[in-house]
Amino acid sequence: METGIRTRKQAIEEGRQRDITETAKEAGLLVPVFITSAVWENWIAPEGTGSMTEEDEKRRLRSVLDKLLYFIRVHRLNNKSNLIYFPVPLTRAGKEENVQLMSHLGPLERADQRPCITIMTPEEYDLENGPS
Image (cartoon, rainbow, N blue to C red; front, top):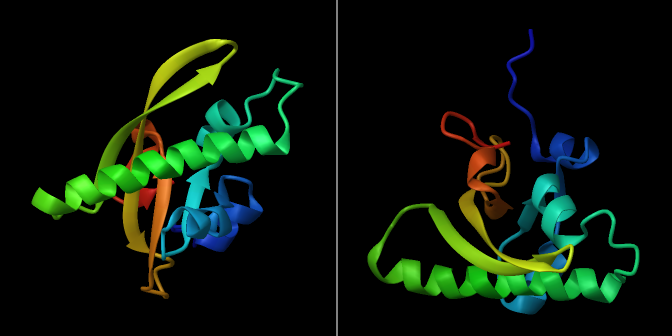
């Protein structure tokens, strides 16, 4: 019987999420961090930008992580929610946009309650099941 509940490992294997923990550690985050493929493909390494290098991707990812860290610090002062919404200025096709992202602090897996962060767009968050 299929319950529709996926594991983090399945999400990574299916290409729906990426593990960005190592870069997140460099930025100062102490828990595992994941990013959805939609955010990665649209904002970190968008298609059609053939001149993008791995260094460009890392710079964009660091911009997202730096903004997230700032908003975690601000959020922590007056809010106890595990959801944080944060805008990030990113450029795609030569046009800068203020991209609305969110992070979800939750368990690594249903069976593994260690904390982790998932970065996604607000549209990707499922109120019943958490990050998709």
